[in-house]
Amino acid sequence: MAKYIFVTGGVTSSLGKGIIAASLAKLLQARGLSVTIQKFDPYINVDPGTLNPYEHGECYVTEDGAETDLDLGHYERFLNIYTSQANNVTTGKIYQTVINKERAGDFLGKTVQVVPHITDEIKRRMLLLGEDGKFDVVLTEIGGTVGDIESLPFIEAVRQLQWELPEEDVMVVHLTLIPYLKAAKELKTKPTQHSVKMLSETGVHPDILVCRTEEPLNNDIKRKIALFCNVKQEAVIEAMDASTIYEVPLLMLREKLDLICLRKMKIANYGEPNLDKWKGFLDKLKYPKSKVTVGLIGKYIELQDAYKSILESFIHAGAMNEVKVQVVNVHSEFITDENVVEKLQGLDGLLVAPGFGKRGIEGKIIAVKYAREHGMPFFGICLGMQMAVIEFGRNVLGLTEAHSTEMDGNTVSPVINMMEEQKKIKMMGGTMRLGAYPCEIEADSLAHQVYGTQQIIERHRHRYEFNNDYLEQYQAAGMLASGKNPETGLVEIIELSNHPFFIGVQYHPELKSTVESPAPLFVGFIDAAKKFNDKKSAQKSSSKQDALI
Ligand code: GLN
Image (cartoon, rainbow, N blue to C red):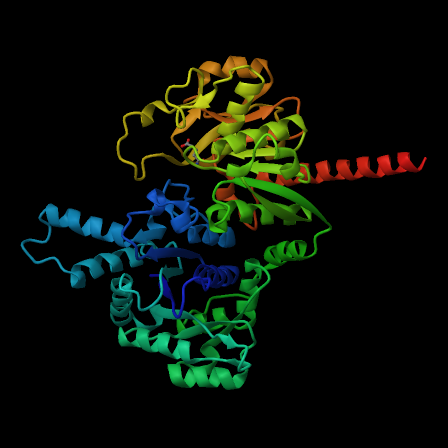
């Protein structure tokens, strides 16, 4: 049977519980253990698929089509493994299961209660991934902050498991904050004491405290925290602010977070951590040879979490190309024909982001036109690809009313159309075309060059698609469908034949980019941006020389 590590959070949200959990998992994995992570979210939505990105940030989609919390993205990027439907559980899912059972009469006349019925279902799901012997360790991140009303049943389930399972099979890591008060020039432990007290009152005792801090924790502070919070001093872990999240596993290694866990769980068969690839990546990330500036054209740019996986993919692809990728956020709602040059001319590449609904799409279309006409590297993802199709229809094919039926149901040129199987769907939750589908790439296309293979599998989240009635017209004018679903013919990739790098994809390559295996399209795009930048610099210096002559 697997061992279970629960990661809870105290004092405040946004302390980076997901990163700490992923870092610990990374270290255990690097020592040769097989590890997975899951997230338990206290909200009542069945999944975050119906949540606005402003509410919840990006909705991360797994290979098997689950719409999940963005922390699962961190897990996959750190561990280079796939997560699944089972790795993200919400209060909504728990209640849905219990209520369905009640309706089926499975409780045989009993009153259905939070304890034991809800907590039993939570425990069942907490243990599930560890049951088939595939994993040595299952980490579970509990969303929210200790003390929240919503997370109480989850914490209660952890309490029960601490009693029901052998002592060495369960442990709790609690993440807290040690604020530094500038006026007093002091680190303060009281919020942590309160948070641990609150956790203890629910009957759960943390084995390790990971303390987020801006200043190093000296031994006196660690001793004080240990004393008041009832943990061993060595189990008070300093988690200093890091320059990048990818440094956190190394910081945790230095603090021996993994070793303390291994010891408590009585795991003996582990090796020295093999982090060669990770360190290689980190070196390239920290010491780039040059810089490129790319524009991220989206409508949720006020909230960076909305584009989490895209931003992380840029980091992976930048390191691979040994360049620093500076991302300039351009709000699509405010791009007009008048200001587009001013807004985009300094960039080396343009990524038009995914999205839903009408707001900001005309700005996206104007941006696509700029990239197409100026030979600027262009990369459109999902809605971004659809906007590229509309732009080409309107400005190259002369279909002046070209549109997606998502935005205009009555357009005379529906170049993007709702997928046939979507038309009968009435319910919103979990009903898009979701998860991994194969795509077959045309030989000798840009996509082929970028991927180096003709068979790929990528993840999806959409209801609309390229309308194949227009395919011939598009291809004849130079927009090629270079990737298609082999079974349905659905257009997965479009590209321009007479442009250095212009590619749009119906799927989400950002969801499969990891530290160890960056998404090829991002790597290719950053490479193209680098070349574009080099060309610009060469042009600049030659015109300077001309001026001197
Ligand atoms: N709204 C578009 C669709 O449903 C694009 C979705 C997306 O960008 N993820 O097809």
